[in-house]
Length: 327
Image 1 (cartoon, rainbow, N blue to C red):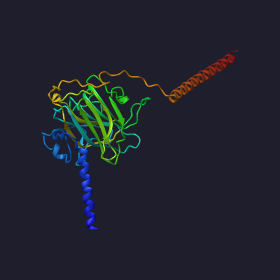
Image 2 (image 1 turned 180 degrees about the horizontal axis):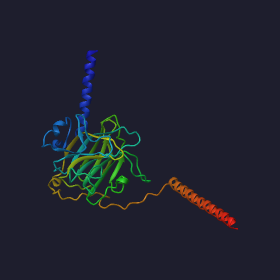
Image 3 (image 1 turned 120 degrees about the horizontal axis):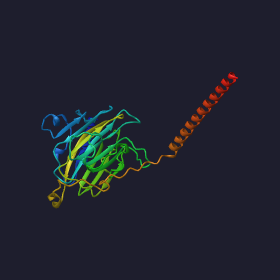
Image 4 (image 1 turned 60 degrees about the horizontal axis):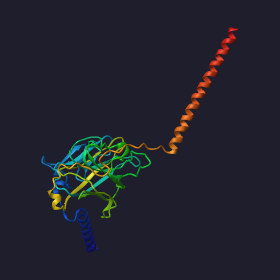
């Protein structure tokens, strides 16, 4: 019995170690420690020379870095302060989004590759009209149009400082691509991989604890400069959730000599469909909503007509009464 217990324990440790190695390793690459973070966190933030800076309401425990807690009107961020000098990279983020809300919760968080770190604003806690790449992990649908999609939803937006992120429409008119990904409230580890290589952006997920990456979407002709910064932000409003970062592993990918020798600092961020904001297309109202509006309009007119009729009837009766007394 004792021997069996020892064998079982060894097997569990082996499986866990294999899982961590497989999940965190990337072929033909090596991890950049300066752009990675893992437990224990207190040692990371204990010195003034830390590569990682906290913003807003972010708090650190021994188990997670919480960008926002499950409370209204909170905003927080985690930013790496070393610019990314290599052109091709891959980032694996272990995160957890959860809270007490069953039907209403939000809003999600964003993984940034941005020119200006540690700024605050209306886009999940970061500034609008930003420069760079945003991977938006959106958990609440603000947009009710017919081209709506289920949430949670992962999407990407590339901005050169000229685009407005329309939060009320979930960025529908400015995102490159996206996919549905039910990552909120999972009991298993939830991970996302962001790969940028040879001007191609690929987003993959592992939200079922199977140690297998599933491609979310891919986009080509995505041009990003070097020397931008990695970051994470989140914000809550009337709705709230816990948005936790568990670990970040960043890898420098194999790059051609020509690409390494390019001057990529001055590249203007751009991607197909992201050069200029598309005009808003108003959502046609559904038949149920139209019928409801017509019903209330007719009801209002009936009430007005009844009011006018009753008032006129009362006025005429009163006038006839005074005439009768006068004669």
